[in-house]
Length: 319
Image (cartoon, rainbow, N blue to C red; front, side):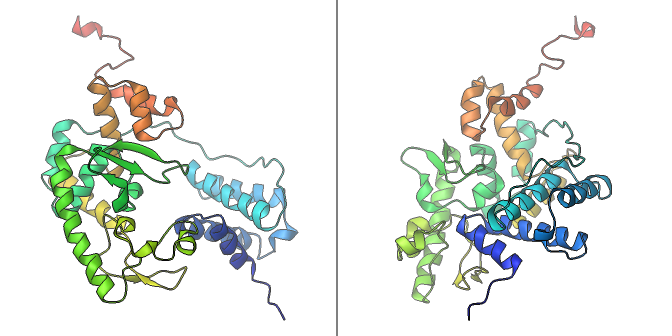
């Protein structure tokens, strides 16, 4: 007698079929659970647009969540109804959370160097790639050995935001440090192989198509975790990538030590990368491609700090 999986298990199975990340899986399952609890544990098949609208409005009005948070909750419920329950939601007229219009925090080049002076080891190297190559945090921690091309001086970012690949530069100033770092990582990988491990997680269905690929050096993470851990999906013991929170904490600590009073974070280094390229005279289309922005209007936000306050208007006080 076959046992039909419970709803949330069906959601997990469908997410994995779609090759979504484990973070997306955790977030979607959590939002769907909260939606069900909000409506007194009613099954979603008994509900529809009015209940979805009520939940999203509750998030915006009573919980005062950010627009991005409300959008994530809505995406989770759309996934539930469309992909799992095979039902189409009509227009949902929930009260939308306001999306604030904020300018990015940018460090000066002197501030960047001051920040780097308070970072050491692998955290210094990772921060150098965030700033020197314009990588997002998760693009950096998920970087694979095979995607660093020393000969061409470039980094291939696989499956970035929007599931897009792109090419960005490999800063020449980090090449020596990165080669030395990879020599140490290779020793760790070789020891894992001797211990009967050494297989890394592969995206999509590559592990079934190429059963031995996960053991190959090229697929290993550039920034592996210090310890092996059990993969929550497969149950296999593997060496995953470094936890991104360790880099976030290291940079926050370095910002305080450097006496920088801006609300900076790991993502600030990517903002600074784009702004400093534009300051150096590179055209905005080139910067757009390096950042992986879908639309140039997203990249245009960095023009606000190009020493042209007030859209290029010179203050009458300075005449």
